[in-house]
Length: 174
Ligand SMILES: [Fe+2]
Ligand SMILES: [Fe+2]
Image (cartoon, rainbow, N blue to C red; front, top):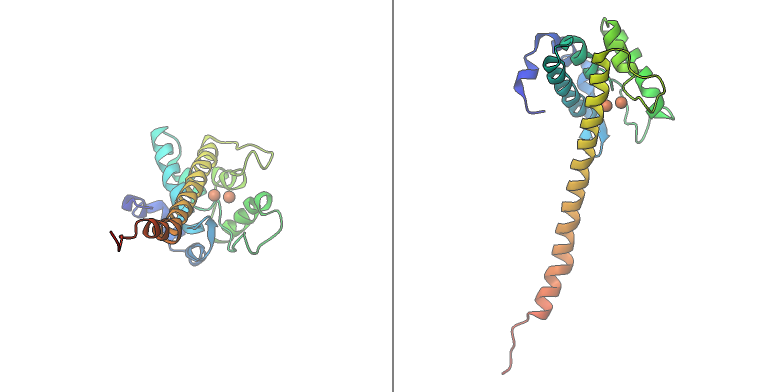
């Protein structure tokens, strides 16, 4: 999350300073991306889309910030069938801390569509659902690229360089 403008938006301050929301920094979400970082990127993209489409930017941004508001690492813990169940868990957690409008609730609850069968109801929820898909894809592309770079460096160091030095030994005789 590079854009500092996002952190100064007045309607995100209560969420950003919430202790449980801050704790999302502890949980890896996709690849090496934390839930916190993923959520901020989805929220920033949702905000930009809502502004561009002249929709409710507050609802889209707040819904996006809270769409994955679950405090566990889904790869090692949490409930079974996380993909289907976490929207409801996120909504329950969000409702304990914040007053949510119907657009925010719908954005959280429907963001996994079409994995969960009921589609988003409001344009703002469609924005959050779409932004989540885009950012999640980018999270995995970043992860795959970093793995590929690591594999390349390992092969270069442990296979290519030894091979090169073996066949390019300076001749010690004439
Ligand atoms: Fe999610
Ligand atoms: Fe997400």
